[in-house]
Length: 272
Image (cartoon, rainbow, N blue to C red; front, side):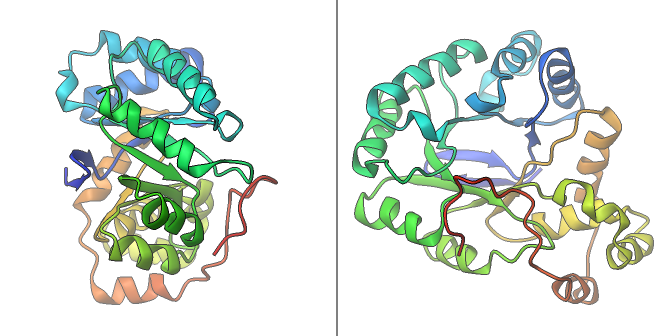
């Protein structure tokens, strides 16, 4: 498994997303993922599954220093006191003394970004999170965090897949050596029926989804966190790492429509 080095941490390029997994389903999914080799687990206070993930981590025989755990603060909790309360609750549910990465889950129009990142940096200084970052930030918001506030941003987690153009954000992140962590990397199942990806997959004895995932993971500075609750799906995502795409494959993927955004809540920013 390749890792991305960023702000003092080493993040496995392929992780397990856990959005909309809860209770025993989530606990069992994390236990299974850890047993077959996953070491990067992504969650958030809004997912309401940190307790289930904490239970799985507590029974796992994986040394803590081999794990990468990310969680996130919800956009309604972006005042200093609320961030601390949310962080304490997350750490308690996860049964950990620190997380590896703590993210602003979504931007808020009312946030005082200086105060937000000062609070996050204090949590880092206290050793309670090893790094801090953001999610769903546009280039304009990234500039505020990186250039105005000068926060040590370890990643921007955004929707990114073979049918959504993120070249503008990628260019900014690349120039600043900040990784992109792709959520919805399989476009919530939309790739399964895509004939172009299926054709490429047939050539490599792989599925359309595996091709789409490998296309992401082949990119410098890009990690991906597909959600997968079943062992078969988790293993298929791991097996995608073995595919060797060529330039012809990449050119076909580049020609796919790039305007299919899956996640766009009413509180989302104005996208690039």
